[in-house]
Length: 306
Image (tube, rainbow, N blue to C red; front, side, top):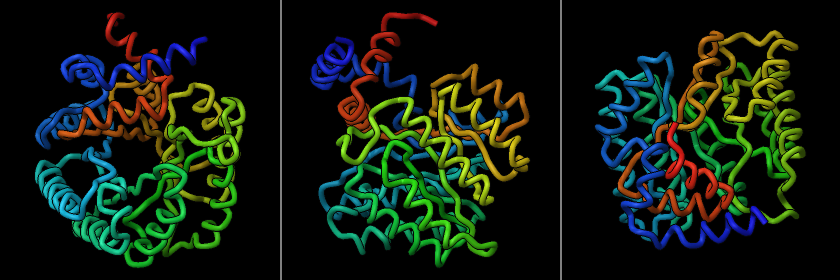
């Protein structure tokens, strides 16, 4: 019954006025401008938290939009570096023309990684829906050859293929060209043929993958708000005596601030994903369509004061 209600709410909300959607979106999105993102990021830095900033606007429909997105990202890097924000950068390949011109997409992202590299900084390639996995693995490998310490990738534990992808990637893990991953559960609504649907199975796969990566000495961004997974991560970190500079925890902006603070208080690196941009409405409604369970959080954010 709950899933039916969530889907019903999710189907209606995209047609609501933007002002209504902003009521819940503003808790999770830094704002519209780069200065909004800097303001939020500086506040997080003051709490001892690093950031990864992301300009919203995936699935562009023409190459000019991809070029515009590139120019905005280059401006983000220049502005953030000038403001001395402690953080790095995340991006979605479909924002740069992956579905239109894969080679142009590569060149666009390469320009971003090159500029970040000039500032001794880092770019994370977000993993999108399952149809893009092979393309995004190829992008990562290609960029990593030129920028071995300046680019990372996201892995999604709910995909059944991820464990085998990790084994293949581990063959490329060397001291001179180390792997660097953000490990998350995944939010896209994929078929049960290719993705785990049961929460316990997703969690177990997450910990299996995390165990493998930490054992092999791979730097991991442990991206979760699930206290059971955080507890499991602590156990693995202790098991392998992982140095604190070889992992970090990651969370979404606006989610679980008390849990985030406790992880920081324990002396761990914490990085918060800070999305911003004029496409906040499209981002919010797409996330809702992909994951109807978010509907219950929307209703709480509207009617429940904390």
